[in-house]
Length: 187
Image 1 (cartoon, rainbow, N blue to C red):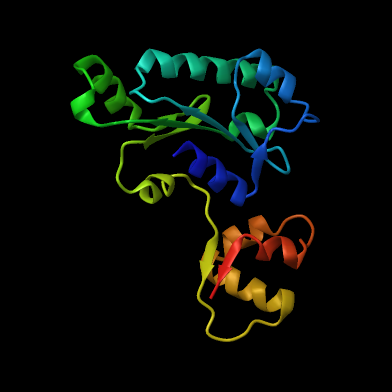
Image 2: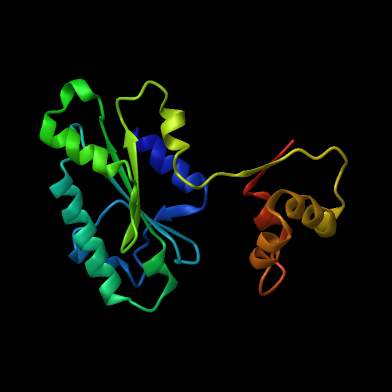
């Protein structure tokens, strides 16, 4: 499943942290690997995988490392856009009471202070459903008539996202049509 999660991240504009990134050294010092950043370096996914269920204290150690990173860069948007993807089996038959209790608390999937958590069940039969938990995917547009360049695409995307969201995403300068199209599934 970890390979599919990494591919999903890369397909949606998140790449392994580059050698040139100003964050790389700090993340490595904290022992945070499998880090994926978007091109603007304002959103991050940290992927952790284990072949057995994770205990709550294991997850807390990772969150503490993320907290350490945010303290190094407190006034940048990346500090508020960190996602932790935990991949482990959640099969209740394999889990003792202590671990199960921790996993139940993990299902909240939120740590409002340092990162958003997404727990993916590596023992699930349908891995696509698990990966769909991640809040990144192409926008699906069902267009009945052909759109005409940038303005036509603007109208269709605005209809899907709503005017307020579309205006927010449209700031500050006009993006390139090719950049928008690569994140859309157009039928």
